Structures are given as structure tokens and as C-alpha cells.
Length: 432
Image (cartoon, rainbow, N blue to C red; front, side, top):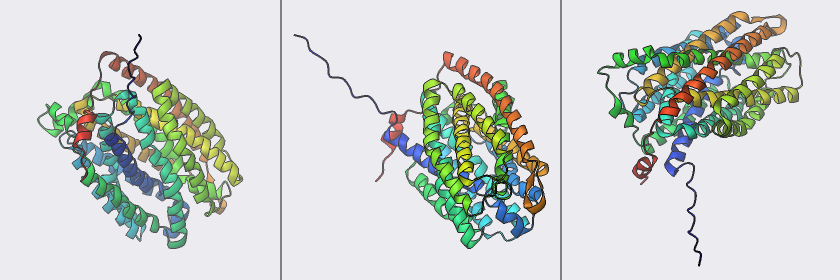
């Protein structure tokens, strides 16, 4: 008589604690991304109220990136020396203070100073979060994790930017920063109360001092290609984004009241594009998804930067397609680059990589401010020139990412990076 063994139920992709970590890091990323992105749609309001030029506004955006670059480099040597949870809380508190300073700024120079403070702390948060993700999740699942965390980008578009713009339209441009500072307290408190320490990397440290650790990480030839690739990756977004709202109003013919609809509808699709890009990255290959997203983004950029007065529905459709390409690039490239560092270098690598990203992004924003000029009626000129520069950088990224992909494939063909055991973390995660 034949007997059949009962089949075991398949293990869930993520444990309960892992889901918590993904959700809380995504929530935290939402506040940081929103703080940075809100400057772009406020541009059309800030420039006339503070009586500043496009070049000055470009600097108001880029100083955040420059200060984030400096703090990232300074923090890199210490990033693997402490519990990542404590580092996350420390820099997040500073970020909230900087955002509150932006909310009370009343002059251009005060705003510049406030953006510098915000960047000093906010710029490191992303790298610490990335190090935590790389510690806790294997490369086979990391695409999906990145996809969910990058949904913060979509949430900021759907909820954050429209609400922030409505508040700005009714109460002034300071209001969105008050909103971010208030909402930002929630993930900070939850992390402090419920996230367990992330300390497995401390057992792997051999460098005696932070400066030695920083020097070895910077000098590692296996990491240089990733840093160079990140430089080009940052160029595209930082060049077009700061002047997106001004271009939409003065060139495309939209109104200030149209912007919440544009950002909200476009961001809504990011809820789908983020997880889909993560799933496809793990399923069909991260480099394939990156190339597909890059080609799509280049096509849309070529169309978008050459538009004249355009109906709102058409602008929304073009932005949706652009977000599809951007999310595919963001998720797949982040997952690939996260696989480059060794476990004992992850914190330093992520901090340096973040610094490189912020520096190149800041330079790109400043360069964009110098390329762009104001014509009659506030119309932006030479925006199509930025599109050409962005497409050139994306082409270079595809080539460099090809070699990153080969490096990751070679590495994981020989060894696997063991993350901190999820089971141990879940057992330690006790909510009274």
C-alpha cells in the first residue's frame, strides 16, 4: 500500500521581523526622500518669493548634496564600528532638526544654512539603511527588498508631495517642512523602541582605527568601479529634477494647482513599478532590468525635454512612463551595487558610495542651474540641453553597470555573503 508523505508548507519569503524591518526602513526613507524632493516643486514658489535666480535655486538644492557628501565621508570610517541601529537614530535626529530649521527659514541664506544641516545628517541615513538591508537579506532576495523600500519614492509622490504642495499653496512654502518634521517623528520612535541591534559586522572588524578602515575601503580596487558608476547614476536625476516644477509651469503650461495632481498620479504608479522592478530583478536578472529601464528613460527624456505647451493628461502619461524607467534603474542598480562590498566593509562602502552620489548629484544640480536660463515670462531655456547630457550619462552607466554585473556574478560564483540569521533576530524581536 502506497503512502504519501505530507508536503511541508512553503516557507514565506520574509519572516515577520524582516517584514517589519522593510516597512520601517521604507517609512524612514519616505521622510528623507520627501525632504529632498519637496524642494523641486517648491521652486516655482521659492524663486519669486525669495527673489532668487535659477542659479541660486540650483545651489539651494545642491548644498544639501554637498554637505551630505562631506558627512558621508567623515562617517565612513566609523560606519562599521558601531551598532547600525544607534547610528541610524543619531543621524535621523539631526535630520529632523535640520528640517525644522528649514521650516523657520525666512531668508535665502538662512535656507541655505538649514539645507546644509539637513544634508549633514540626512545624507548618511540612506547609507546606514542600505548597510542594514545588505546585512540582513541575501542577494537572491535583495531585489524585492529594494523594490519595497524604494516604494517610499512612490509614497512621497502620492501622499507627500501633493499634500505638501496643497499646504504650501494655502499656508506658504514653510508648511511642507513642518509636515515632514512632524511625520518624521513616527519612524524614529518606532525604530528606537522596536528595532533590534544590528551588530554582526562588529565581529569582523580588524582595522584598529576608523581612518585606517576608511583608507582601506577607498583604496580597494574592487570598489572603485562601483563608486565611478554611482557618479554617473546620480547625474541624471539631479540635473532634471530641481527644475521640474518650473519647467512644467512656464514651459508646459501647467498651473501651480496642477502639480499635486501630476506628482500624485505619477507617484501612484510607483507603488506598482517598485515591487515589480524588484521581482523582475530577482527573477530575470538585475542587469537586464537596468538596461530595459535605462532605454525607456532615455526615450522619455528625449521627448519630455523638448515639449512645448502640453495638456495635463499627456504630461501625466509621459511622467508615468519616466517613473517606470527610473524605478527599474533605481531598484536594479541598488541591488547590484549592494553586493559589491565585503561584510566588514559594508557600512564604510555604503557611506562612501552615498558621498560620491551626493557630490556628483550636487555638482549636476549646480551645473544644471548654470545651463538653464530664464527667458521671457519665466520660460526656461536650454532644458533640452540637459536632456542630452542626461542621456549621455545613462549610456555610460549601461556600459559600466555591465562590468559591475560581471563582478557580482564572479563573486557569488565563488562565495556567498552570509547575512545575520533572520531566525535569531526574529526570536530577539519581542514587543511587550
